[in-house]
Length: 633
Image (cartoon, rainbow, N blue to C red; front, side):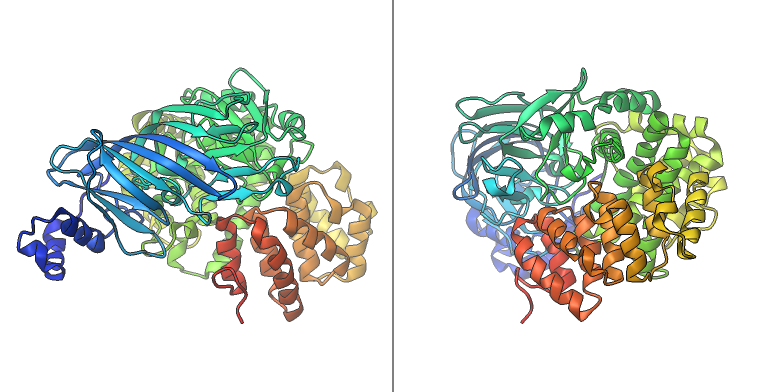
């Protein structure tokens, strides 16, 4: 799926900019520096890699974890395949301190870093010579490496040991490993990680289940993965088994509660396998991270990272686990070729997630999830505005951080596209198509164009029934979308109308509703409500102290919108404790709508920002108008 750069187009500009090359300079250093200065993204607009020429096929890491300096240091050994005569290897990096680069025999080689791009970092260009197949890169990360979050003991649940975790998606792997950081490049890896005694290290690989007294851990991943699935976590962790292939890691005080919450994971795997084929990654374990983790979950193979905010005590939010599990097929097995094709990862995964939840919990439950997803999609489309290019499924994120693609377009519009295809051709035919899709393209990359061609080939009746181009290359929600129908939500809306007309909160059937029904009730309330009505709801159902984060965040948005000050302490407490971006953004966005709220947001963020991951601070900095981590003067 990856093509090399069109050298006939690029070479004249390169020669004009660097006369020494035009004269046939024999200085390797000068040539490498010139190449680095001229490096541009190739077929993947978010990577400098040129895998059609030289491709990384295996990575071996030897790293020391230094909590005092907040640095990873050591060596990355890259084993390569070479398909062109060029001696130059192009890698992605950002903020790495490169100490030395040598070949397998220890011979030093010339290398250079290109100019810094705000959106994609720097090209690292290495002169391999005519035959180099293995290259050793000695390097160190920096304390502010965007993928790494270093937590003090006070920022963990148990408060005894520090904690480190990585977040490599979409293009942050290059901030802790020099490699080809493109989803179109897959490689196997091994690692030797040295950590302080008493801590457990885990990776997206074969993992230990107990602490090594010496703090030395070895890992192996024999199945090829893209760079964004590279993951490392180090902390005071314990393990509990939840099935033959499943288990949970968490801090000791949380591990039993987490194991109970996720006890149905093995059943989810079996349901998924019945739909679309065998699980191909060996084990499926979960790691519950500290609350500063910026996402709900991250589908690192063999070790999904999850936020503690899904531990509600009643298993009501475990559809998130179904989502991350589904990525074991859509994303990890068949991967979007570039981040412009992100919907191929997330739209497929939301579809698969809801099919798993339907198998586990029934069709009405899955329809409630789909209805909530439709609400999210419509809100996203409203924010983007009618006809927005960013509402196309096939993205256009060149020159921008692909983190902008992480929104309801990729997830929910992608889901409704696949749901509409299913409705058009019938579930049996669509299931056969998807199973064949995963089998045909396993451990390969998939572009939107290639998917459309495969749909033409294997499910031609779908294109006769559905305007595929309107979904992929058109804005908004196309006509003819198959939309969910939830009788349960219809009944909830009747109760919303009763409450709006003056019914007391105690008269609502709130205690008989599940989480999804409660969320629909809150999201369907009138935008403006007087304080006495909000107080009635709050005091009757203890919303400001809800242990269910989804309900709490919906409620706090309502409170902020209506200046219900009794809930403000809960807003502050939640934002200082939780770093999940899905929750941070709407709460801060609601606050900044008024001068008083903006002042409140600034005050809270000043205290909370040091505990947030860079993924979250990038979003909230932009929302508040902060620059370089500071409020605008």
